[in-house]
Length: 134
Image (tube, rainbow, N blue to C red; front, side, top):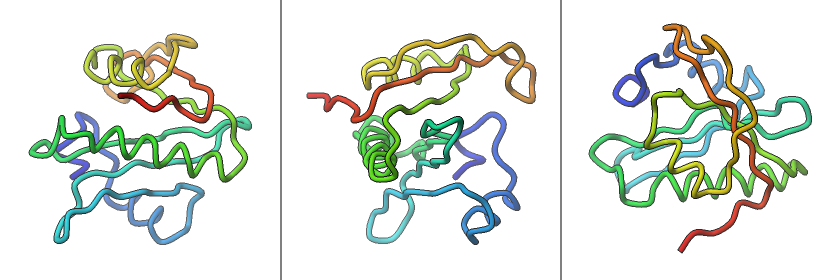
């Protein structure tokens, strides 16, 4: 799924180490009875929860799955006593920017050449708990 959802996917070996518990990354999955529809990845960074990744299978987008994943991972962050969440998003990903803005995230700073392909990233931050959207 990571390869279908990201222009610069995380290597399988990295995800396998994460899922084996060898790293501080926590994964939350959204499942149908028989398949993974999406996932979100959480870690801590400088006393803040960090949304390291979120992805929804292309065939299941625009059905509220990303919203549920984001709310779920933010609840996990709250249970870990974080009161803020940060994330980075590609500057060219307008759809993701709109999604995060609706979810309470605000721009903190631009990160020059943040991604491996040289694209700039934007660091966003939100207070927890995230507001529920109608």
